[in-house]
Image (cartoon, rainbow, N blue to C red; front, side):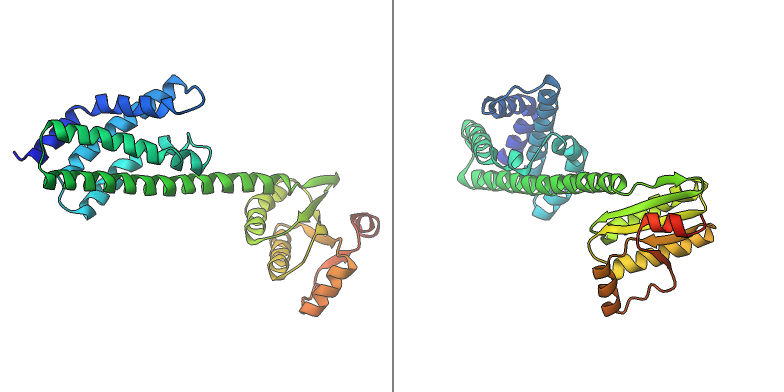
Length: 273
């Protein structure tokens, strides 16, 4: 057994001891108390990380190191990312943590009297594993943040698109703010089915609260009209302000096939609903 392999075995055997030292160091630089369950989770992660590092020393190819790391890290990545509130929480303490960890590794190598060549290899592998760990953690956090952001955006869209009953068989859907592809798709996918289950025969789509009417908004209005017609629901469009109407004419958008009114009140007073 070479000293490099022997070092790998020692690192794996001492993984829990090193993990506790790394965790204690990490906690010592934090300006707040950490719950016990978070500490236990961190110790568990650090132990598995040190164990993986020990195994990585025995792997010759960096590509295989990456492949094995990805298999291992995906088990812990969710636990690791949900505890972070922003990316600086991950990056800021990294240099000092890396230095502390490296000193621990170098102390073990000195005790085992490894050759310079073996030391260079182990330190190189150590740095490589830490680098791919940091990169993977950042990507995982960005994915977690994107999912969270999309969830919040969908909730905002849901709150900003209420279908309000006005009288028996009539409801209004006010469009407010800017309309983008995500919002129009959400309306068609989630709001329209709700309208179909409301037992109404007329929906007023009020556009007085939107900024512009472009191709996306136009396509949405016509798609919604077609879907509601199939459901036996008449759609009326209201709130097309003069500047919006002028912009539509200049853009070649033809709303003549739709029933339009200047306001919701006018639609209620004029149309037989």
